[in-house]
Image (cartoon, rainbow, N blue to C red; front, side, top):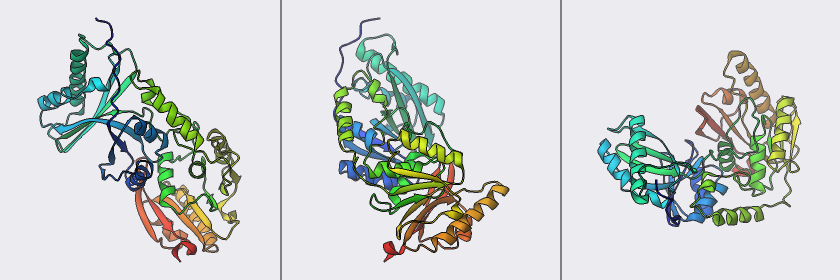
Length: 388
């Protein structure tokens, strides 16, 4: 085996792709426009835009609703294994993957003549390895360095191949190392907050706070704390990726935090362990002194101001006994909020209409979302100050 080839410069012009959960596309599109000034359509949960290395880093650091950020290496038609191999091998993998890189492959095939994911994985891996070996003059890849994870998607015979620049999914903000009974992903929580009328100068409350995700994500948005500020990404381990891009973007993110912003953000839960967990997560997230959590039954919840926003994830009541308890919660919650007409309520609930029935009011609008694999609905109830 020969010595390693000289270090190659990582390409600066990139096709960047961000993916998200179903129902979150609109929120992610708006985020990308706010951060990069680019309007792009969402196709199968993927949103693409042109950028550079700085944009790639900023996307990982700053996008609150994206699950991962990828570098698209190529897209082509593939109706046979030979076509898949030849087209993958023709791509410039040496521009991205160092000679000692560990190449892993995963993907999916939908409505395509190529339907065996495992066979496609092997073919993509072999094509990439053959290309790199030829370029670096090796007999086989050593794969002793950092991981470069390749994702492929073959949809109606159109193949897209990408490199995952994020590594661990972006909803892992690293402040929630302990979970409540029914945790909601941080990315979904952020999307729901973007869909709501929540604002930093407006009182905010979650009366079913669980592990505190809505309150904490709202506070981090209000304080402009970048979601990826306390974690690392796959590209941090790539020897051919210049660390100056990350160092510069991280410093900028830290400078942009609004430490002096005052917030009236609170959460409560009937479960004292959930409240304890919320406080622990708030401390990890750097917002301990900006938010408050209380042990409180929803029956005792009373807003302390004339207007504000509630964003919450009340119990779904999947089991028979739990359903009865959930319905009682919905009814109590509805009775209370009718006395506060200038408060808006945004509730993520089960896909049936049990919530509306017991809450006692038809929603102004709704949106279908997925909490992990569970289909649910976001119910919008706008306060009078919003509607008027």
